[in-house]
Length: 455
Image 1 (cartoon, helix red, strand yellow):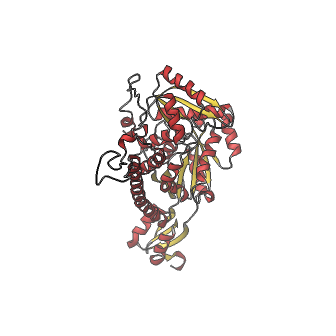
Image 2: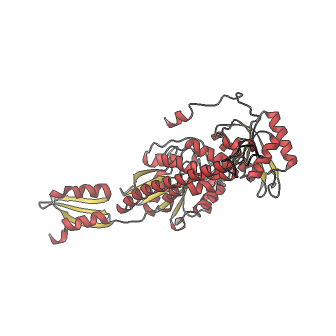
Image 3: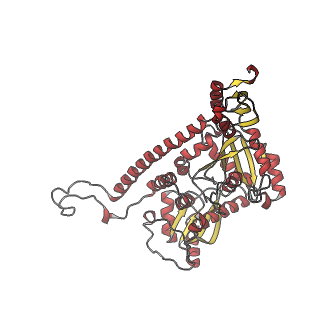
């Protein structure tokens, strides 16, 4: 149903509103239509540069646009004025005019000055990779927390990029000679851009307070799970690697699955059981991408804490991707910013094995220490993954053999639900329970039950 709703309104190619005035782009809602992509290749191989631009194409299409052209320029570093240099900017303007594009997307984060000067040259809206990713997040956020986190990241990005609309909207006034406003109107006043900045800062402060309150609720739920001593497993990885598909395959969660970047943003936590019956929680987290905007990492810190508090991380990578090793490196770069992740065991789950090159799978398996090759679509390798999770999860439980009175059948029921029952025997005095149970239930059993040897 979510997928149907997302695809319910699509743009008709060829119908667009051309805007001559591009001085107000920061104040308009971002809306991509017909776009030209441009990237600067500063390091690495030509294949790396092409893969980066291909990923930008997928991001642009996910945002709902039609990609017309893709250009790469070889430079030692991006031009400080126009990102690609004044001559190339003029060539880009000719290409934009010839193709009828209304947006240019740059594969990098542009400074406010670069954004303004490139816009003045090409005469259409210019956005960068960061703004594009923020727009996709804004489209796909569903929960109240997710929407607040995305809005905070957008405002944080927008604040240094605001620019005024000219002197006609200035609130600066002087005396009679400066405009004849007379008494009560003298003084510097407050310019329109200062008003906008102040309102944005106030909104950001309010959002931080809201997210702080939501973080408290999340920590309360997390503390409740820790109190029950249920092991936690976090699914993390590159966007569109198949994390939601894997969650659905392992738990039947029914999470939205779409072949698009950042299809799901809100974390989903589900109960699951190992093959021997042990209970654990499985959390699906937000996907990562190369050069993930710093604003998003800050805004989604409370969500990323699910990874930091896990007992085991399933690092999902797309085995059919042209460069899966760069995906692993990009995700681990974000992991480095999350406290405590370095000490958590990690299993690399190579997904989409049904569509991957066997040579690439062999290289990844040889390079990474703990790997499992699976296909969430076909179910191949899922049993092996469950066995690996069972082996790697920490054991909080203790083995008991106790005589439980018949009137405390609730303890037997809890042993079935929360622990692993190894054997049951009914006697005249009660039920002999042989099981592995968590410390909380063990304390309850010690109060009520008797050791079998003393009976």
